[in-house]
Length: 349
Image (cartoon, rainbow, N blue to C red; front, side, top):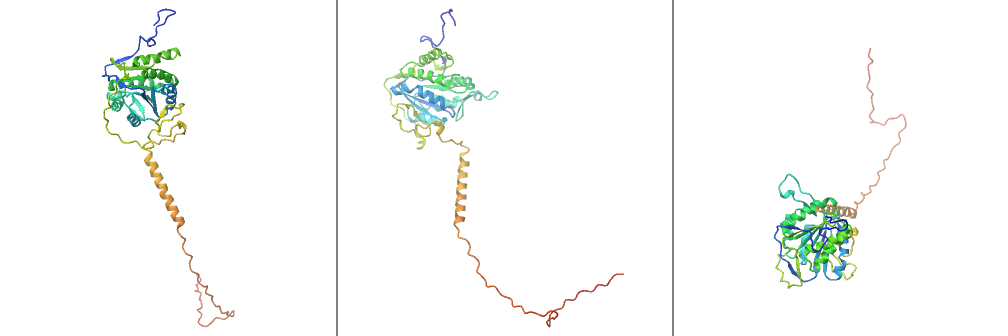
């Protein structure tokens, strides 16, 4: 909206005007928490670049002990649930493609889906996230421009199913999204409400001539305040026991080097780049690989046994028998020697 040739009024870029989408979902109350807040960055396969940029943008907040940032690469729904269960988590940032729903089918099939290891719809994702009561904000980001529209619908459906504040970043570049989220998460770590935190991020987008209206936040009525920093923290409710993660999947100890403040939760050693990570095999291919390895071992054992088996002994030598021949004069036949008689033929007339 323009108020003249010199003054422009831009919604969501002023502190007294915040652009939000209010839903009818039941919102959780503000969470009393002692700083720092914990943020989990869950990046699906192929989204490592955006996760690295966001971790770099949040390095100053981690060094100031206002945020604890964990990063999970090659994330799927099971890995996200395990990472959320390790420590109380307050903010979840998911980077993954989104798919549009199907048309002409049941109502649930028409919902957009998040491609997080496998396709997962908002009700299923809300069921997983509902097991973690400390969670207050879900951010959905993507590196694919075609996923921007389904991601907005997925954020709305996820907020309606879970009641959690949900932020969809829209179609913005990964570097721009990292700067926006850094401003937003920094404001939340300072105790600002969610709508004003998103406004700070939009102001930064507007100052850099980017699409400041692309991010959309969905909150419940009166649910702008997500945390009450410094308030007395109640004892956490007991949680059901979960199966322990294997030693290869456990998070390595946090490094003391301040140049790497983000703790990696990926299934490799800390500090290992995504280009040098061991390849991950699909679940359907693992039994075939095991069967191939077993068959190869059996073949090796059989060949080694045949090579080690002693050869058969050579046959015994038999002496050569000499035949004594008696010379017979030509023209003489010894007595008793059979005589060959040729048959006679009668000529035909």
